[in-house]
Image (cartoon, helix red, strand yellow):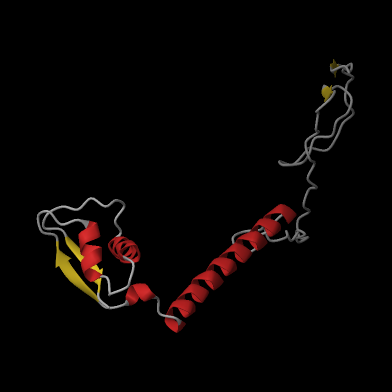
Length: 164
């Protein structure tokens, strides 16, 4: 590819009528013209004659916020997000209905016990267990109700203990 400037010789131009302001200047003899890759000549606008109305060209409306256009990938992503939201809503609704229909054993009546010096979680569970009930199950219920991560207790700590 070559880029070049072409210089044409200047010849005396024949007599022409005077140009009006805004008229396009034609490329002709005696002018320089750029040529080569990437050259785009300027657009020439036709002159408007006096007394003749200008032609109105309507442009299509540009896509704004109201005219949002999605690609195929965007539509797929939007569909997946809608399905995830619907699944999450149905799981939450199912959990809510399931809780209302079948109250769990953790919602049994409880009492508040303040930990005294020397008391352990095992001693509290053994005291709260019904006759013949395994204290390990009661210990697990106490830990679940109070959100305990370990069996360590502090003196004066208040715990919710299930009452049978």
